[in-house]
Length: 264
Image 1 (cartoon, rainbow, N blue to C red):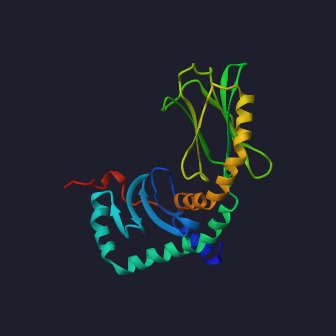
Image 2: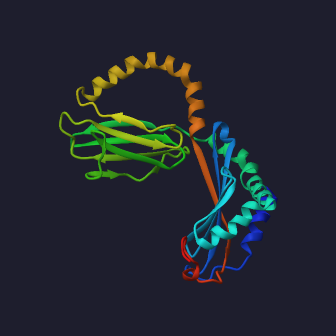
Image 3: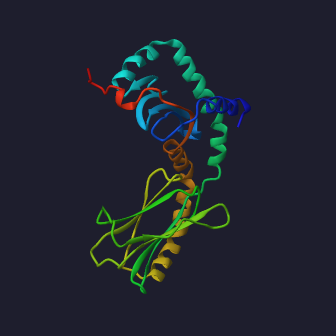
């Protein structure tokens, strides 16, 4: 991180410290990187008082919005002040724009999960597994006839593989009856949309493997041809959000004395 960014954080952190959880104000700055190569950035500055949302600036909108009667009034002056716009642009530049290169480097380490759906007889259950994915955050969801299943479902912890990748397993028991459409839905940072793995009980696992191997050569050619397009679509939809709470100080006015919107 550049030295001027570090100094920027340090200056704000030396303001009056928080006394209690019920007596503080906090500004949180968030940068969202999205689009091809994560070159599109959105800067959001949020102000809270005693854990209550008071005001927010959004660089895409280009203005402040208030959430209390008092903040709505004084933010009218901020929105009309050209110097405030200059300050927000400066913050976006040092917090977001100057860090795009680090986000792009991080993206090179991402890995798409390998997904497998199998049945186990003892005990009777379905196992949905995701392997070799990075970063660590991932979500597995079971669907029965298109509806999310919340009971009889368990998960393993996200476990490291030892090579900067992870694996996770989810279990659904017992094995569903014939006629039910069971799907394992996997959501991950590297996927432009959720992957749906449907359980097919019509063939035993060895026979399904033979068919899969037979189709592999045909599919491989298509994947190589379309990989460039898929890569572009993935990059256009994925995004990363980084936040930094850089200012805390004591609140001099009790929250109950701040009028709500519509109060007289």
